[in-house]
Amino acid sequence: MDAGQRRLTRLERAAAYALLGWAAEVAFTALKDVIGRDTRSWRLRGHSYLWMAPIYGLAAVLFEPAHATMRGRPVAQRAAAYAGGITAVEYATGMAIRRGVGVVPWDYSGHGRFVVPGGAVRLDYLPLWACSGLVLERLDDALRGLTIRTPAQARHAAGAG
Image 1 (cartoon, rainbow, N blue to C red):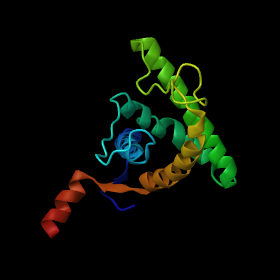
Image 2 (image 1 turned 90 degrees about the vertical axis):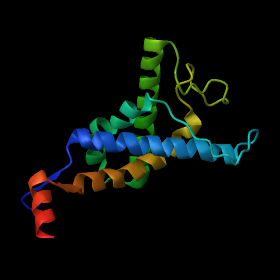
Image 3 (image 1 turned 30 degrees about the vertical axis):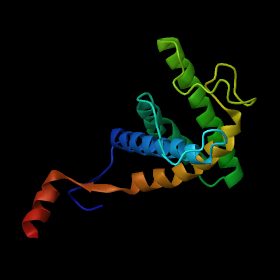
């Protein structure tokens, strides 16, 4: 790394995970409108919850160490660990929000037989979370390898250009 450059801080990576998680969730919920059995719509109306920003930001604290630990293990083993971990975080955060405000914002109750009592988790989403974890590996590597210019380097580059 050159002088005048630095790596992203954990807080900056958490913000990146939060923004990308929000964008992915909005896209996912919009696509569900198109492929939905009962509510097929081309409006592509996606949504998320403000609660999700800190939850997605937890990836910098929880996912990054898990990825470091799992590096080099077989894909199926990593995918299973990620699916279990993401499901556990979804359940824990959903139940914590319910204790705090009385509802799980993404309550899955009534969405089929794979919903865990309490509505915070859908077990049929395990394959989605497994794939998400494998994608997050790439994002983790990219964010950890990303360098940004410090203000001094940016001023120098502007003056040299």
